[in-house]
Every structure is written in structure tokens, then in C-alpha cells.
Amino acid sequence: MTTTNNEVPKVEEPLEPVVVEDPNMTTAIAIRAAESIEDADYSIAQPKANGEIAADSRPTSHVVNEELLADAPQKPVPPELRQVVTNDCTTEKLACIMASNPRGIIRLNDELAAFIRTMNLYHGGHGADRQFYLSSWAGSTAQIDRKSQNAPLVIREPFVNVLGGIQPDMIGTLEDERGREDGFTHRFLFSFPTPIGRHDWNESHGVSHRIRQVWHDVMDWLFELAMQEPDNDDFGSEPQPRTVRMTLDAEEVWAKWHKAHWDETEWDCFPPHLRGVWSKFEVHALTLVLVAHMLKVACDRVLTGKEYLQRDPQIDAESVQRGLKLADYFKHHNVRVFNRLKVSNEDLRAQQIIIWIRKRPGRRVTPREMHQNGVAGIETTSEARAILKDLADRGYGEFHSEPGKGQRKGEYFQAA
Image (cartoon, rainbow, N blue to C red):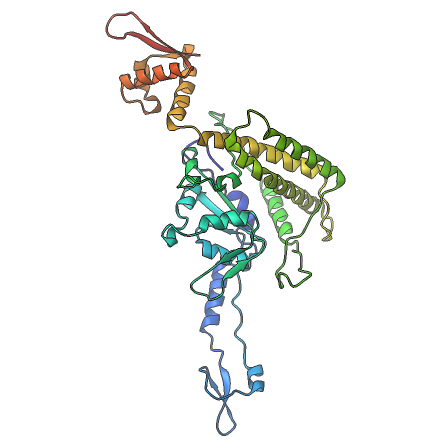
């Protein structure tokens, strides 16, 4: 997500229902429970010479009776925090959270630029944090090697969403610092709306309490859906994602969009820098279709109170159309973002200045007026004159110099 001004948009409010999935399992409860387990004394009963039983937490060299071992208290497993959202954590910690939450995790970042800068921070800049997110997007099995454990942490079907805001001038920080094209930025869905400008005040109080409650209920209902139990030993006892298929009508709608999407890449005028973006949108579109479908099912059950049987209802044509409408929205905004990445700072400054000039009466301005208004950080009249001549060279208008009293009294720029 990007913003059109210097403020990064707040994205926490829609996530309010999913900050902690289980309201009875807070972070503090989980920490206290884990500490009590670590402090408890789970000793093994050892036989004395006279046949009596004594407790000793330290292992001895002699063999312990099997019956005594069977009756000995077992150290319980610390409870795992069920969560959906996390923020400031290392990749190793994120992997641990994902292993305990197979439904997936949202990594929430107020500033995406800061998220990128901290990658590999604890590995001297030579870690594999970026590769971890690339593999997770593709659903590839992730393996994290940690010094604290002998066995690596393996996550099958990893699912992590990176959500946050970024200022337009900082979008370039998402690219690889060495200039390599690894497709990292192509995996983002950007929302980059045009500035709304001035608008009249209204007395709206925002989203009503009733709508907020419905949103909470929808999220709760979705989290109650059971995952697919494994039917073989390939994944042990780990729950797996469920498979939802399309109806015949839905497949026709999808096939039509799919063909049109790839036909666009064959246009003679198709920008080369968008080919990587377009290659990822097939997955983006299917994901949005699934989101639209499951929200439709959830809203239908929450608003009507209908009983739901876990039969994985097929995706209908209406859900596909809704999801593809979202996909087209994001395609348009991603084009804006990636076109901006190819624009230099000088080009952006020229666009800012010409927009300001076109709002003036008569769409004209003198170098002195440019300087006096401090447009785009201009500090001298000479600098303003050079910029206006550059705008004329770019085809944004004409620079006129007419005879007059004093030096350069008749200079002005007329915007096209």
C-alpha cells in the first residue's frame, strides 16, 4: 500500500478482529504458563536401598524400574499462542510463529521501507530473509536452521502476508540494493490512489458499530472453519489447506479473463518492465477470487444464521467476477507504481511543477513568481528560469522572453 502524501496510511483497524485469534489466550497468559512449566519440578522416583521410594530430580547411574517411569509425572508442553498478526520480529521468530499457526500469519509493518532495511540485519547483511519471503509466496516448504536447536524448523505450506504502507518516494527501497531483478516487488499488490484534494467536512462518524460487529462475526466464523486433516503420512499429523473448486460457469469467466490478461503481454506497446508484474497476477487473481468467495459464504451464514456444513462449496461465477474486479483494480495501481519506479527525480519534479502552473490563472508564470512561491524547493530566480526552459524542452509549454524595461522583465512560461 502506498500513500499520496507524506503520511503512511493506517492499516490496523480492519485487522482488529484478528490481532489475537483466541481471546482467552493472550500473550501474558502464554508467557506465565510457559514460565510455570519451566520452574516446576518434574522429578523421577528413584528406589532406595531399603526398597522405599525417594524423589531425585537428578539422573542416577542405576537402572530405574519401568513401572516407576510410567507413573512418573510428565513435563507438559508449553501452550502455543494462537495468533494471526505479528509485527517486529526476525525471520527465525516468524518461522516459529508460522509453525504454531498453520492457517498463516499477517506481518504488519507501519513502514515497509523499514521492513526492507532490517532484512538480514542480524546476519551481517548476508542472510536469506528476502529468499524466505520469495519462497513463502510460492508456497514452497521453508526450512530454517537455528543455532539453538540441532534439527531445522520445517514449515510445509507456509503462508505469510506482508501488509503495510510506504511513501511514494520510498518505493524504490523495495528493489534489490544490488540492482538484481529477483521479482520481490512483483509479488506486492499496491494501492496507489490519486490525491483526493480538498473535500467538504461531513458529520459522518465512520463505520457504524453494527457494521464493525458484523465484520467481527465474519472473521470469527472464518476462523472456526476446520482445516483438512491429512489422509496419509506425507505430512504427519499437520492439518492442510482445503481445496475449493469452481463451477462450470465460474471456469468460463476465469478462462476469459485469463486469456485477455496474457494477450496484453503480446501487445507491441506492452512495457517490458511490467512483464514480471503480469506473470504474478495469475496467482494474485485466483487468491482474490478465493477471498471474495469465502467472504460471500461467511456473510451469508453470519447475516442469515444458516447452518454450515463443511462441504467446501464450489466457487460460483459471481465470486469469480468479484475477485477479478479486485484484480483489475490492483493491476491498474501496480502499473502506476512500477511506472513511477522508472521515473527519475528530475521527471517527478517537472511533473509537480507543471501541475502547479496549470492551476494558475491563464496557465502562465514568470521565473520570479516561481521563486517567490517556493515551488518544488526552488531557491533562486535563476534556478526557476532554468527549470521553465527545461519544461519547454520537454514539451509542456513555451518559454517566452519579450523586450521590456530592466533585465529579463518580459520572461514567462505558458503551459500547454
